[in-house]
Image 1: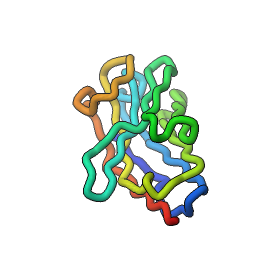
Image 2: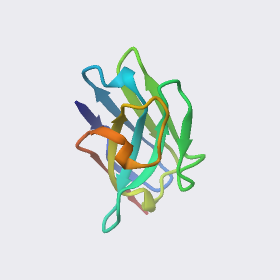
Image 3: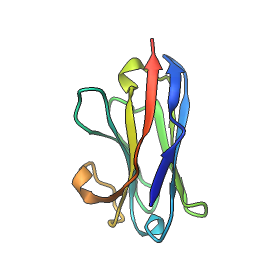
Image 4: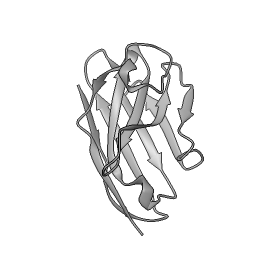
Length: 121
């Protein structure tokens, strides 16, 4: 199971930290990722981290967001800085069975319920 938390309301330019707690054997089996779905938009890739720590980011968040994982605590986090109103979305964490990350949501088998992030201007 995946449980995302840490969302909320932030002002433009502010920061939020999302975390995803993973239970079961899923966490140490593969890559983890964050996706988001804004109002009236399709779900989109935000960031991913492989089983071995390699990371990747969508161009829209590169330089502002940082993904990390703590294998001992079975958590993956997303530090979001310099937030923009365009970052407003429901954020989902996802787990893959593959060690390498993917940008494709179909490659992620397990999904959390999502946590809402609202950035005001």
